Image (cartoon, rainbow, N blue to C red; front, side, top):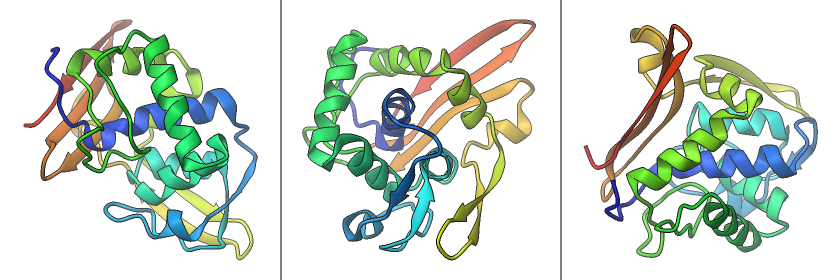
Length: 200
């Protein structure tokens, strides 16, 4: 539980939490070139496109878009680097003392790490937020690019939502160095259980 490990895209729980705490869902966010150029999983954003923060959150948590993560980071933090500082400050506030964030999406970096225990603290805080609970329980969602009204279809990477009774979150993550990672949540009979699996 306390071994420092790479979290991959489970990082995006913190990105979403800060977006919900500091942003407005209806706010319009313009995608920068740097956001559009992020490698790895994406929601296929292009520089200059405009989305609501709400739709970027769906792209972040369903499609696991690294491009959406960067766009959110720039919008909420003013700069991406400013957002990383916000992430680390919030982690410390939660008692996640073995966590350090170096980016908003979880692509591997020697200075980007956490523990299963710290992720459970972050997940529990996120799940107290009603909007977050609805977001991560969503299987599929259509989002809209505002300026050209282009529709994008999103599907949640968390397959438990389809096959496990009561599954209602939270986030998948996979990179070569992190292995397959999953924070899973399920609720039955008024009881919620949370599981954190890293480097599977």
